[in-house]
Length: 253
Image 1: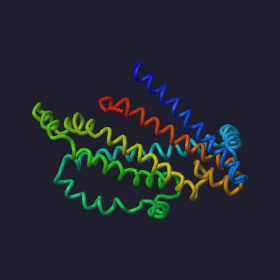
Image 2: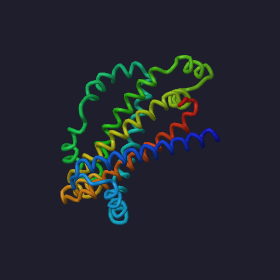
Image 3: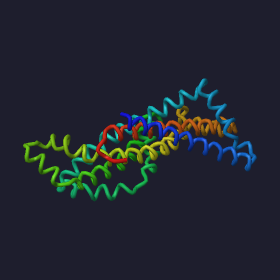
């Protein structure tokens, strides 16, 4: 417990230090550029505080809902299929060509099709984000399951474990660090795609807020939206990092 508290205090100091450096760099760059399109940080911060009391929280809530639902579905499907393929080599050999053919395709090209088929509401946006993150988690989980030490699997089998028990007690714990790493990488991709889908045919979401502020040339509001979106991603990333520390105690950091 003492070790964990020391770790959290150290990380808190590091984040404060990094934030101050970024703000200092931003302030210096704004002085150098000297353009209203690139306001100093205190102007953006003031706009952020005012926006949180207005409608910015609503946009943040909509974006948070979209990204959390997408990550949950992508994780559920990607981990399930990844473990199954990693455990069953014959099935993996059958499905692998399909994965290799479809994985390199940039899934954002399907955005117009999803808008036509599913409408311009939350569903099409969630499906697109889910589709992109799903592949990242699927491939990572599958490779991790394939590379598990055979001794671990045989030792549990020798105790009479069935297929479900192998998945739950061997494959899932063994792949969990890789799954959480893939989820952290997928979070960055999800936030980028979230911004993209929220700039089209919608009036809710932080991406819409940023682009709407740009159209009004309200640059303070625009940067406030950027800060809000970055903070949202950072908090979600910290949540995943904390989950990894709690769930994967055997991994050294």
